[in-house]
Structures are given as C-alpha cells and as structure tokens.
Image 1 (cartoon, rainbow, N blue to C red):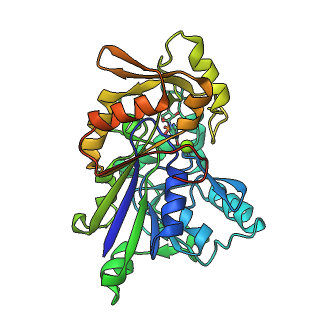
Image 2: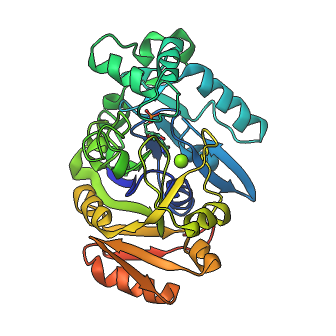
Length: 331
Ligand code: IMP
Ligand code: MG
C-alpha cells in the first residue's frame, strides 16, 4: 500500500484542491481519502474548464476514483446530499464512488445551532467545533448510526487491510485547513478542531509505513479568516485580496492578508515531514508587483518573483521538490 498526502502549510485556502486534483489526474490512485474536518472546508477545483467548490466530497470523484470521507472527519448529511446533487447535476458521478467511514462523526442541526453562537473564534458556523467536541466528550453520533448513510458506509480496516490486493492500493490523502489552524500546532484558540497535519492521516487507519510523499501546499502570501488580528495596515494587502480574489469559498468572508511567514513554513514543513512543496498564486504577486516575505522580525523585500523564488528555495533546504505555480489549474 502506498499513500501520498496533501496538507496545508498555512491557514487553509492554500490551493490544496488544485494540487489534489492534479495528482489524482496524473497518478494511479485507487482511493482518495479526506482525513480531517467537515464542511468548514471549501476546496476550489477547476475541472474541464468549470469551477467546482467541494466541502465534504473528496476530489477522487472527478476522475472516477473511490472517494472516502475518513474517520477523522465530521459530516453534515444535509450538506453532503446537497453536494452530491450539485456534482451529479454537473455530470460528475458520485453515488457509486463515495464512501463514508463507519467511525466518522455526524454534524447535527444542534451542532450547527451551537456553532452559530460563536463570537470568539470566527468559525465557519458549520457545526464543526461542536461536532468534534461531542465526539471527544463521547456523546457524538457516528456515521454508521445514520440510516441515510447505509449505501456509503465502509470499515477502513476491511477496505484496506483485508483487501486481497493490499499491495496495489494507492491512496491520496486529502487534508483540509492547514498547519496554522491545526488544533495542536495552530495559534490556539484561533484554530479548527481537527488534526490538519500528516499525523491526522495515520489516525484514519493508514499505516505510517505506507506514506510515500507529503505534499505541503502554501501560497506566496498568507491569508487567514477568523477573529484574530492578522493583517497589518498596508494598502498592498487590500490590493492582493482583490487581485487574488481572497474571499472565503465556504462563507464568502474577506480573508485577511499578510506576507508569507518563513518561520511558519519551516515549522509546518518539518512537523508534516513535507518532502514536496507547492507555492501557489505566484501570478498574483506578479500582477501586484510587490514581493515580500516575513523572516523572524524582518521583512525581506525582493525586486522580482524570480528573486523571491530563489531566496525561498535556498532558505528551505528540506523538501526535494519546490514548485512555484502561476496557474489556477496546473501546479
Ligand atoms: P471552524 O473550523 O469552523 O471551527 O473555524 C475555526 C477557524 O478555522 C476559523 O478561523 C475559520 O475561519 C478557520 N477555517 C476553518 N476551515 C477553514 C478552511 O477550509 N479554510 C480557511 N479557514 C478555515
Ligand atoms: Mg478552502
């Protein structure tokens, strides 16, 4: 069994959807597994010239690959069925490909109502936090308990470890959110409630020995949506927000913008064990014409994208592959 992993190195919205979509297109995966989060996530995918935003459904469905909502996830049945309908009305077959781990948890109407009361964190109000709270308080509802999920339920152990073709299994593990929002590594309490790092993959029944590549996905500038102060008062950030269309895929909220933090990247690359790193949206800074990163207390300014790119590549010596991407649908 082989598993590749896609994780966010910043605060979500790094373009993981794009990277996943391309890996699925070019790879030989038998499964795509979402390993954390719920419909707080919004993965934007350009497929055959059309824009799709998925919340629950893994990107495997775009290429006819079995797509699993793993045990580390929480699922809102209403949102899920809405999404299935949306994709299927656009000609993407979902029903026969979608699987839900028996031990994933359910986001109930009560969880959504609870989350709507949040004022402190700036959550997506999708019931994510309360669903995980109840899971860990051991009063949650498991996916296997919902009759409407009957068609989709699988057990991760039988799916992988009792499979006679175990050696042929290739899984792409699709992460949601990112390192800066991780429950353990993000800036608590301004975090989400799940494990967004490679650690989360292993908790989904995928053995660590199967992991081959960890693709860390970053953006050449940072964005964050939530209650903490993130954006410095510099008009360039408003410009990046407009040019980069930095508005939430799930909530439509404007994302706060900042320069990319090298300290955050160093930490998230190490802790995720990322050996391949993709920097998205380099085209946006080209259009804005300003290139800068934060390194400790310093702001490093560059005269061109190439200059920034080679500096970043020298600073981050760990990954074997570092790619700067200037396209919406290609790495
Ligand atoms: P929650 O996950 O809805 O509880 O929100 C907690 C924090 O994570 C808030 O700051 C959200 O804006 C942020 N967040 C959750 N999911 C995403 C995502 O997919 N992209 C970006 N930010 C997210
Ligand atoms: Mg997103």
